[in-house]
Image (cartoon, rainbow, N blue to C red; front, top):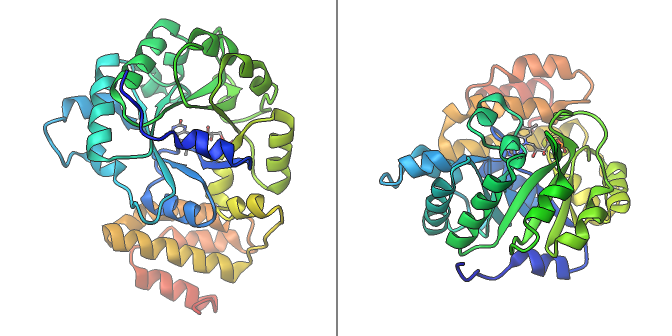
Length: 326
Ligand SMILES: Cc1cc2nc3c(=O)[nH]c(=O)nc-3n(C[C@H](O)[C@H](O)[C@H](O)COP(=O)(O)O)c2cc1C
């Protein structure tokens, strides 16, 4: 087993405040969004899931698409964790070494929760969770090949395998952190989150435990922490709509974002993306913009215009029309 660099998960846990994490979200948690969430107080930010198999087959190419997806800004992002998905331990072993060497994140994570058909078909994501033997082999492969601490993300249940059974099966392995999405594979992304899992798993896992699912505001954040007793929270869709939720939880007070604050955020996000990747990246920005404006008066009118933005000038003009170009 490779000797691990400093275990930042343990350091964060020792600070005895809930650890606030931006959960991985394909198509959303790129460097720009991670920077925004870091600025609002996220302690740890996860990449979009990256294919271990794609890294394996493109290992000779230093600038392959998957490595490009994983690049980050050391100055502007807090602790950065790269999430890998796949099912083949050999692919994971190579991917762990490659990502450590080329990307140098603070941590590596393994996806055992993705419910998407084409991922399940490869025996990856939530399908790997229900294959205990293979799951263990994958975790061992990453532990053996990673210098940085290793975490895992699982669901409350996948098929017949519960989170508790899964954790018992790897209780002897030095995994540093666990993120539990407290919904089963059958539930998908909706329905009640099982907070009791954290206490049930504690006797079998010494690392940091994060609860995930359904946190959308200060009230649901406080409930999730109290009911679960977890060391921290992982925010997903709640952060897409309100990245300032990290600050709200840290400061324990509600923060109102009015139209002009949201329009500044929209612009800041667009500008940062254009600086990194050029105006063509604004096509991706549109779906994030729709999350930010949710709940604002006249949101459907805004949405119709924002989904057509293809240059910063377009956006400036829209904000000007709304009197929001300060
Ligand atoms: C658009 C989208 C993309 C996601 N991509 C990933 C991913 O790449 N890896 C992963 O482990 N989970 C992924 N998830 C799941 C989230 O990390 C999280 O577990 C789930 O949304 C439940 O949290 P929430 O109720 O706070 O949204 C994704 C979720 C959404 C909505």
